[in-house]
Length: 407
Image (cartoon, rainbow, N blue to C red):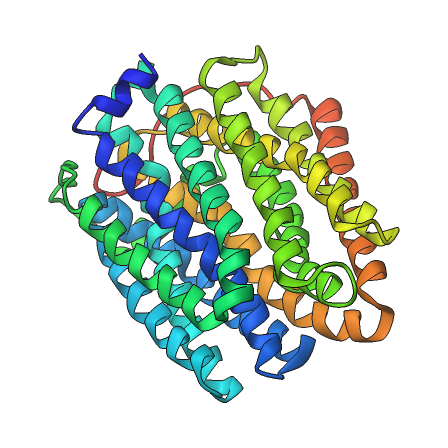
């Protein structure tokens, strides 16, 4: 049934949109990182830009309200069009000699589009397929994300190195337009007309989110891991590569290796249904520490690329198991809000982390910063495992009563 969903007209546009959109993300990731450095703004400027791109994620609960209030495919399509406008502006900046303030402002716009899209994206599968097929559908979405990133990153390094970061940002803008067109072809149900107001809906989503210990415990771990990974991917890794480890082309291959692992992880996630998915979710994130710790030893880009396959696979499996577990525990009309609270902690702390990463790299070096990020990931995993074993909180998921206004 899983691969038959690819031919399902109610699902296929979503899969195609995530494939195209994430191919563009690969271009955007490399274009922004190396474009800011080539403009001469240095690690500190790169930290500021990445932080500005991450800062709008603080508004992700509002994106969750939109994702539960309106048709999710329309919310996602509108977000993609907003992203296209922001990335087109960034392309112009990187093709010229734009000041740092202009790049930061446009990065804010790109980040805001992501904050609107993400909660709806995590809930839309529940609108399109029956519950029995949701893990397979989530796995296919994960595979499209991975395949898109792999294609984007594998080619973006060559484009950025040969034609310049501005053209990489232009490709990202074009793929966002294509993604919006594909998403517009979907049909998702309208939400219930009765509403208690946005603030009441936010509070209701928070009550749902805090009702299950496993949800907030895994969210705390996810926050720590996401912050460390954001600093590594956004600042530490590009600076590490720029300083004698292969440059933009090598970093593109390293991140493409991670995407290839994610593609393999999607294949595993289609059929693997662990007996205790929550315990597996607690263990998987530690794989992200490996490349960071290796970079701390001064490893070559080839070694990093080989190891990045493992956290790439674990990341996709994690995403599928988490999304399916949440979809099993909560009714469809609250999914966007629950997922928005899940990512809010990382959204709040990632800008701080990337802002700090630039000065840390300047003062201590990229190797020391990478090692510190890896230790943070390992410590977060150890903490949630200790909490789980002591409190036996990793039971479930089991559907409970919803307390969200408008149900």
